[in-house]
Length: 483
Ligand code: BES
Ligand code: ZN
Ligand code: ZN
Image (cartoon, rainbow, N blue to C red):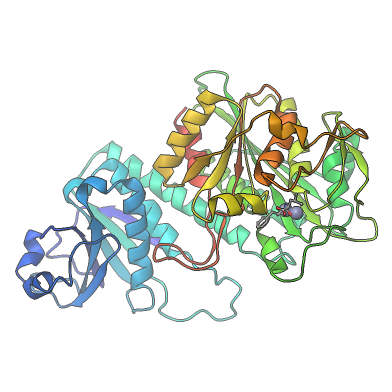
């Protein structure tokens, strides 16, 4: 979808659809008279995400007017505007609308508003249909212009930033929606390589031999049950004028399919384990946005990509592997594979000199039991980094809930046979998984996000298609930009 920034004359603009915001209890001067019956009957009430599509509204040259409910004006923030913009595009799809103008006026006409709407429009244009042999004609909106009465460098920068984040989100979702027979670890590395072209990022993929040389025994143990070789993807951004010596490491779980391995998962719902690489896809997308937006800190994106299969060479419950850190791990359940590949990725990030780490992983079913599909679980070893993270996430409209990392959870991981075992007990599974990772991040400020409940939408929402959500890409980018 093409996106433009302009200053339209709302009454005179010729477009298939003009999108106008109406707040709860409000009455726009330009709509009050032509739409009086709709206001009086309560059909237009300005409720959040209420949409009314009308043809030939008096006083407008636009072929249609879409009145978009914005809710209570004092509650309308960037996250809300992003949802409205996204839902508006989704509302107009399939109705023969090719061009649209999104009018950003009133209290919403701010630079942050422009960025949010740009991201939202792009996010709303995305569909999980890239593997359909024919796409429904007329289903997509080809171009949208944001009309706002602001000029200058600030608004253009905000527009660019919003667009870059929207494009990165869609790239991440395009990768995440690829099925596991196509998106193998090797293919995932190829997607990252293609993204990096022309961005100035440095790029490297460690293959199995290199990982063996380095001693990534925890990752290789997971990979050994699959005929697909693992790929350890490293993308690096270096600022021209660094503002300090912060080096942020972003790590994303890239299990392209998780059968569970020898501790095999039940057949029902197993197809969902193609989304076990969403953390990795978010890191690839975030690195694209970071390369374009050029923050003042160094950022390294790492995606350990593997397939967890029960092949004849698969690791067994009872195996003991030596991780890159030198710590030995007793494998008690081969389905707790994410923490094993992340352990080596965290150690590698520290070896590269990262001073702060954030990992995102569809790590445990337990986090979805705890938080449902609304908030991602946040585990933090450092208060200052947690504060930065929560504010970055709030601006991105990605909900996060702080979870506990008390030392008591470490007790569940004790074994006499090795330094640590890879599963905890029955209760608090998301917390013992996080505690396992903390063993490897050590004293370095680190955040772990468990996105198993939020990375994928089973049922579409007005503002989001079914499938990968792109979470936590927006927070990643805001964190890097806000430093
Ligand atoms: N990829 C799964 C976690 C998951 C579950 C993601 C549901 C998305 C939806 C992970 O590798 C896993 O299998 N975790 C196990 C851990 C257990 C064996 C300790 C789990 O959550 O059951
Ligand atoms: Zn698993
Ligand atoms: Zn997994």
